[in-house]
Amino acid sequence: MRRVAQRIAAALLLVPLVLGGCARSDAQPVERTVPSDSATVRLSFAPVVRRVAPAVVSITSRKVTVAHEPLFDDPFFQFFFGGPGPLARPRQRIETSLGSGVILRPDGLVVTNHHVVEGAEEIEVVLADRRSFAARILGSDRGSDLAFLRIETGGERLPTVALGDSDAIEVGDVVLAIGNPFGIGQTVTSGIVSAKSRTHPSLEKDVSFIQTDAAINPGNSGGALVTLDGKLIGVNTAIFTRSGGSIGIGFAVPANLVAARLAALEGGRGEIVRPWLGAELQAVDAELARNLGLDRPRGVLVRRVARDGPAARGGLQAGDVVLSVDGVAVDEPASLSYRLSLNPLGDRARLQVWRRGQERIVAVPIEPPERRPRNVTRLEGRHPLDGLTVGELTPGLAEELQLGGVDRGVVVLGSEPGRFAARLGLRRGDLVESVNGQPVGSVAELQEVVRRGARGRWQIGVRRGDQQLVLSVG
Picture 1: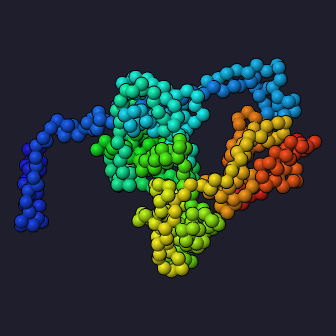
Picture 2 (picture 1 turned 180 degrees about the vertical axis):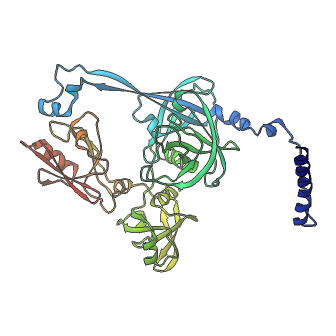
Picture 3 (picture 1 turned 90 degrees about the vertical axis):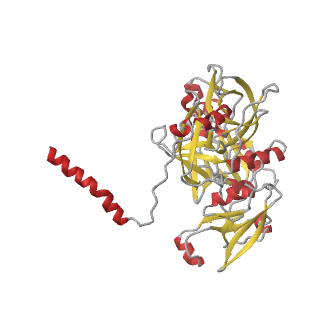
């Protein structure tokens, strides 16, 4: 053993000689300093959490739903027997949704997710110090999954978090996620920014999300994603998961979009107004890039321009490739829409465009959707479309629903659970083109067709994307 120890000691003595031979003659030793405070020794995020956590709240929303006995609640039973009838005993049920939120202003302005408070009849906000307040919805936007609440504080000033610049963050920056996962109480997790400008078909259409590996779980929705200087750079919204819990892929709505939606709410008389472009867009793949003369796949192709829309008035043409918006590169339709929506209404966005082998700049006006009535209606009666919500399709609504070149007709916007139409499998964005062989081009025509009714089997013609479907009932 002594001989082995001697050999090891001799080898260790050679290490400085070998390293010295490889080093430059003017190399200086690495400077080392003693940590100046206890926080540095602990490498702790505690100072940031102490500053931010008081402004992160828990949100409980409640709504009352009415349910019948299962047999009487069956849509087919209601269709053939005219409703649940006197034998059914309706039961009231309170549905509760849990989430998080962030106080932006000391007078009680809170941002959260649209899906946390959607349809809520009662909203309770609980602060980190366990004080509880009632709140009301100021404005909510499904497209960006953002909602703004007002806490009834009685004049009391509340702690806040300042909005940061979400464009300034970089992949690899350390971030903290604060929220109320699973309703267990305020929880802080840490991670990094995994990606920026993330889009996906299952996510919202007009948001370029921040992706993070900070643990986000159910109940974190609406909570804060903050940087180490204590600024809010995202509102936690969604996760990809196989088990229902976090697997390190979470998404947050960027703070710059929060600021834009808040400005739209305050400038839109209590309504969140989002701009529209009036163009059908498509991502550029490798084959398109070669055909268009681009050096690589980049930008967003303009497939179609709506007549008299903002894109047409700004000089955008079908076949153009939008490379950047206000100096920021775009590669997906969602990222282009996101960049446009950061501009206030009435402003102009500068688009760098590739047109027939040359780059040029066009200025597109930022305008609200055209104000043609959408005539949103819920159909009711003894027919297969009972409980279906439809609307008059307009160019703005067609763009919102990503319906390509279609801008006329009757579009499905939703269906009420428990009603007959919910059993048909119709989706938001489907077009109802005919009923029993009779074409329908407006909500009024559809209402007239179903009012007249039919004996025996119903046939409903539906267009879903490039598919033509015929639904048979009866």
